[in-house]
Length: 220
Image (cartoon, rainbow, N blue to C red; front, side):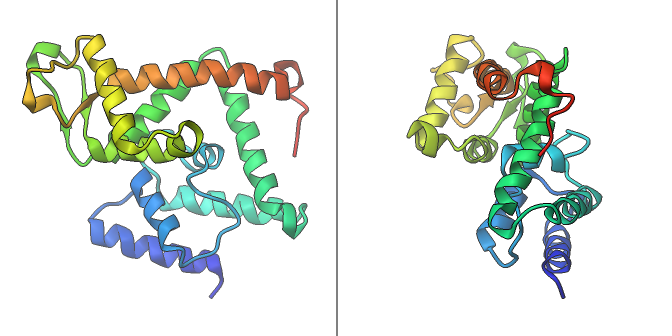
């Protein structure tokens, strides 16, 4: 049994235990933590995840997983073993950057991250005084914290990150300090604003590394 078949069996068992037909971001972190199966890439790497979630709905099917693994098989033939993971992740990041560089790139990228966060939330809330605004719980924020590597890049632990997002919600008047019912929730618009800020900063960096006018011929 190769590692790809082993992963498929582990995913099938996970989905059966969760009574779901698709994987979510926390599921991917769970698979990574178990470490039972050695893969050529990190499924939770942002570029790889963008390639994995082909529908960009935050719901990852077994067909999505199979497609990514087949891509890894095909492209790994062109790489040396010592560079395989870095080159595969670089390839996936390049595909994400191409999509982000489209005219609707910001909207598409923000919607995708929000979908990942929504699907990561075991429960969702709405508060009548805030109209149709959606709120996600701590589990979803924890998944976002891991996905963006906030601890490693900004030295913010989960609680500090959660508090920061809640303060942003208060500034946008989407949370009230006096309402204890809102203590465990973060407005989705705050997540969207965060992603927009990250997008703006990454566009300049990626533009320096891979200018938009070179995207049509850049390859890894």
